[in-house]
Image (cartoon, rainbow, N blue to C red; front, side, top):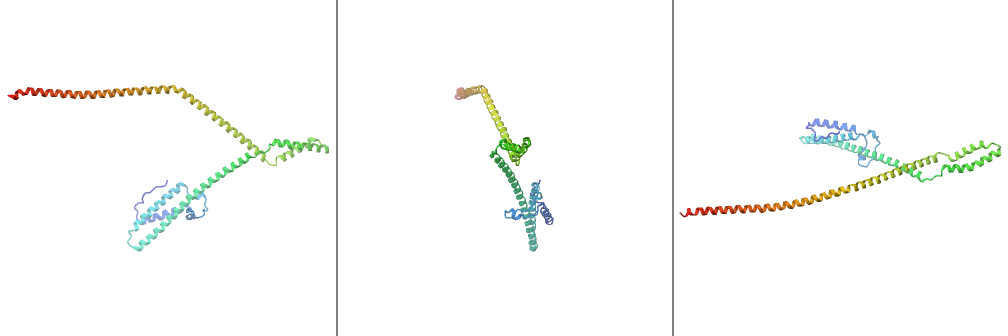
Length: 304
């Protein structure tokens, strides 16, 4: 699998330059040399290249990852060269970076051209398969549209026309009729079968008819099976209908019981609230009576 590299390692500028040059040379060897710049843009002509010379999907992913790493190295070098104080040296380094950037761009265009070639080859294969299928369908339709006269009818017709001639010729020449009949039969066979086209056509028609009969029988069997399964399903539904009704009745009873229980809980809640109020009132009355008793007991002492 292609490795995804987030950022280049902190290398010195010289080592990064050497790594970039080696990486670009290796990628240039892996990609096929073809004029893909215009072709990748849709302007050129399809390059003459075999499919075996094109790298596979995994190899193309590796090349794309290496190109991304080369771009990151280029950015790293740009940041390194920006700190160079000498203007002449910085200009020369920037020119080298521009040349390497153009090389990376060309390699990317070549990779894109390879992907376009792969897509075009797949489309051509698909078109060829569709064309073969269409040709087969046209041949079958043409064979089915023809209605040739049966071979047995032609044999009977030509045999009745040729046999009297052969018999009269044998009688006029004095030869036995049995020696002439094979010749007439051979002539009839050669006249009927100038080539094996009608026989093959009849075989194909019989084969197609047999296949259609088999398909029709399969469809009828499937329809019967579907009908039987639907009948069984309806019978099962009818059998389960009483159980469903019992379950519905049980659910209704549960709902009624829950409603009754809810009414009882509401009644108990109301009774509990009333009892609580009564308890508070009773406690208040007891407290008031106690205070009144204390006042009555304390009044004689206060008078003294």
